Image (cartoon, rainbow, N blue to C red):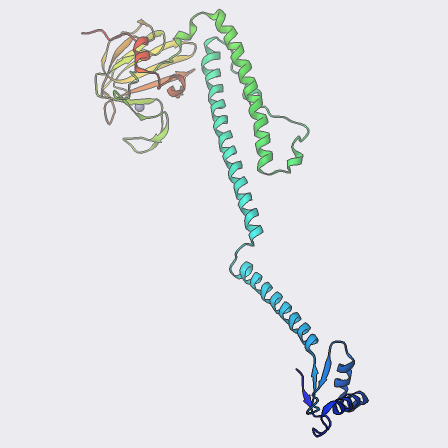
Length: 355
Ligand SMILES: [Zn+2]
């Protein structure tokens, strides 16, 4: 309801007054605004037949304004809320949150794939080391050059469509691994072909653990590799593997060969034995308590060469076992299967001679 304006005096009531009032209004008796309003489709005026007081209604326009106001106000509130939500609280809109979650999910999957590739790469690397250092060398075959094993694919960028990023890196790595695996399987074919004609040279390779593999009889106390020296504390290459066990554990020759050194030292290796296996291999067994072989003796894999002990420079009783290939120390673990069952191991070695 809009403003009220008095019309003709109230004594002239009834239909006549109404007619008069309307006439009066049409002739411009009201404000221009009211006349205009009267003709407008939006506004309308109502004359009270009793009082001739005119009420101008702007209901519809009013309602329109109200609705517009509510809509604009609501929109303003909504955008203010969005702004507050995103900028001040730093939160994501639902759609953004979903996309972010998906993105994180894929990133995790790609990272997992990448980690798996790392594992496969490591296995392939180990295979190639065994291939070069063991299988090929046994049969007097040359090592396969690294540039052949690790060769990639040059020339056209086959993964340009992946536009860099983690997927492209994975695709390229898969290519290189495929090539490596191909070179490896080809090499194994050659080795197998060679083995058919090469007789039993493989028995010279130091390929079994030097001690019973039953976990209750020993503990791998120190692997091959760099470590801080247990006595001096300085970083140093540990040139072998340590099998910690009480003194008196039988120690076995790990491959056919000839005993080239028997020494009884009070320091360093203590009582130790060195065996020359041929094909570039030599093994050393240190800190023994008893030695049952002599220099120049021919030995076979599985012969007992003595008993473990605590002689020489040690912090506790153990067998220190080394493998050298072409005068380099190599990791003995690459040559043996420590998971071999105790029964299988017992079948490969001979009991120590009683004294
Ligand atoms: Zn050691």
